[in-house]
Image 1 (cartoon, rainbow, N blue to C red):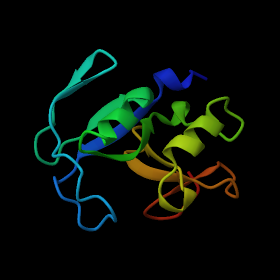
Image 2 (image 1 turned 90 degrees about the horizontal axis):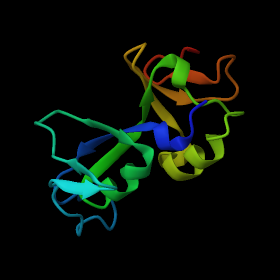
Image 3 (image 1 turned 90 degrees about the vertical axis):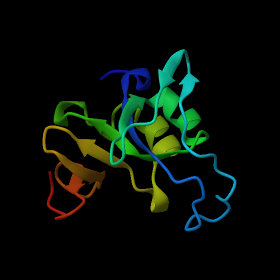
Length: 128
């Protein structure tokens, strides 16, 4: 499996003031920025950016909201994957849930080691 440098994370621009997130009133409005030599312009309304994992944290500090990892079914990280500890520790969402947008399925899924496949559809809870 590819190293985390090749993993992608999905981000969206967030509003300048995020009153629903404690301590977020000082977040900057999303703007164009350069991270690790790559320029990111805010997407159109309703749009998103799929960015390398190593850029996602810096974009979070520039007004973007991290939604989760993204890739094909074949690129899903598994518990035994060398990247798993890094991804789980760095990009787990609220409650320690690791989210992944599976582009093959066109759906958000979340890690669930108790399911046969290791993931469940976030909308239906079916093992995927």
